[in-house]
Image 1 (tube, rainbow, N blue to C red):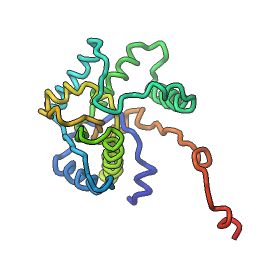
Image 2: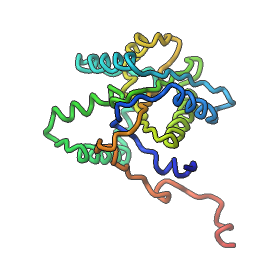
Image 3: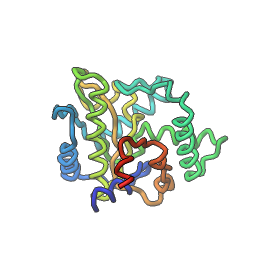
Image 4: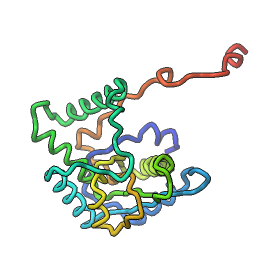
Length: 231
């Protein structure tokens, strides 16, 4: 598989087979992801690779926190409330939510089904492994986010070549104290994002959902190409 094929075929996987992912394979993927570009080569990412009993405890405690009414409170990249006022952004969120609920046959009035769907995110979508990315508080949030995003994208594209599925989501890291308690991650690290990792379950209907993408002419503006077009 070449890079373009990986880019076109990568999608968010929200249902996984129970098969574990080997440490050697994840280490190989991390080595590949570490080739991602970074600002001035600072390479500020730190990765915590979690599986087994530790991951199960994090999933359990995340759900307990949510059910107890504790509001999610991520270290960085908290949701910007203004984004919900942008009609185009909001409409895309609604569209994919409808696609997923339709695929999973979750009706609007199905409170139990919708609640279970929400909880899946806080359980890292029941994946057998997760990668939690963190960085140094010495960096401003935008620098941390930009560099870690490059690492995450590279990791997820590489995973496609090894038949692994991934889902980049903030829900699993919404309670930093849970992550720190079970991993020993120091307060000096800022938790940024989580990646669910595992082998996709082909029977899980939501995995078949393909999100709509805007055409190039909807987001691209061309400057200085007039002369080239006329040649």
